[in-house]
Image 1: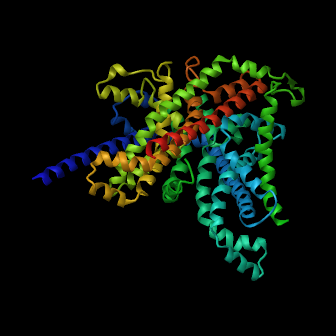
Image 2 (image 1 turned 180 degrees about the vertical axis):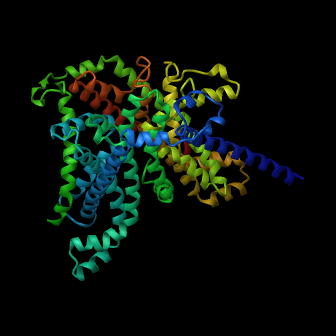
Image 3 (image 1 turned 45 degrees about the horizontal axis):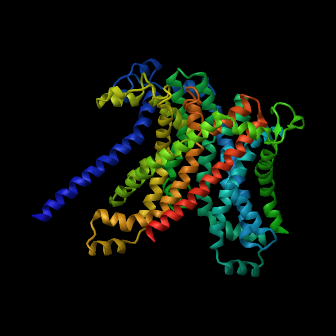
Length: 285
Length: 289
């Protein structure tokens, strides 16, 4: 009897837990579906203010907002720009970071620890302390309104985290393997290409995913340094667009969906890596 | 020699985009400079910028505001993330929740800010509709347009965006715990609450410290959402320090003064994280030694 009562109690608390978790899940997901539904409606229908469920179903769904946002306005350019900025700075940042990690992890040279410590400490420099001086140096270099003026500073911000993660990973590679390679006649570059990079690939992949998210989502620097519409990445493009069309909800919401879709896609394809990356404790959100 | 070849390209970029700007921001904080003339026209004015900053009530109100917001966010978000992690860690198939809770965290502050700006919209926004649906229509507000509710509304947005990461960190901490400790506790006759208080919580202290530090630093730099949702308004009621720095530089064309504010606020942020590390280490040690 006691046992049965206990079981009922357990079942009740389990129902309670599930209810709570489902409520939180709905809170996380409902906004997405609401916005998504609105992108298929004309503006007037959004303002008509239907009830919470009816609003999720457009009366006469149409792709009109998407064709407008993508081709009549400049969102196809913004997306392309963001792809360029993200790809270039992630490749550059990771390459430079991996090279430094390799030097610091395997080679003995003066200033080795100083280089490592100096770069890692900058991970702690808060964004509000540095964005104005960064803007100043970009403008002094004559790189306002240029792609390179975004890619170089972006790549630089990716170096510390790359170094931190990849160096830790490299430190675990057996030194014997490197010695054997030296005996077999490998020079430092061969060892990097044929041994170190293949072995650190998982770490590099994880870091790369987080870098892609960081750069795709970055908005502050371009909103200061880019005034030429054709060079905006997606986030600052979206900001500018919503400044100009803030009453046209269906269009701005469509722009928003366009700007988050590539990242959501990446997330669903690579969720295992992403969640493991966070779980390993090394990467913060 | 090769070692230097390996580090030089990265170090050059690092010096140009980190070290030099850092040095420059300290130097310029002692200069009067609009930012629109060549830097050579900047005029050295000693500590004037700092004197002005200490009398700048709008800036200090913004600083106090983010400290309050940060405290509020920690009090709200740490228990939420911990509680959800405790629940999910007991489920056999919790993977789906892990996935769902993590989705908001992959979005940019701009996107999250826009989504919630529309959710708070008085005419068609969801928030007021939900309140009406559950019979609390007297709680309806023009959330972002009233100075009493705007900052709170933005903080809720921040919690929505970031709790997934901290939930995951807690979940990892919980899953990694030694099952034998729980078995021992149950053999000793500990009930659920006692097990949590004397086994789970002490083991989670390092995770709680890590999460609080990340949250303090993250929430005090809250910026993108504010730019999109209120741009500091109504009045100055949602001004945050990062926004003061930006507005001084570009709207008030005083680049020199803006770097002074950057230096001061950057210093405060670093101090805050050290203070927290220190306090939580001590507190954690005292409680569970």
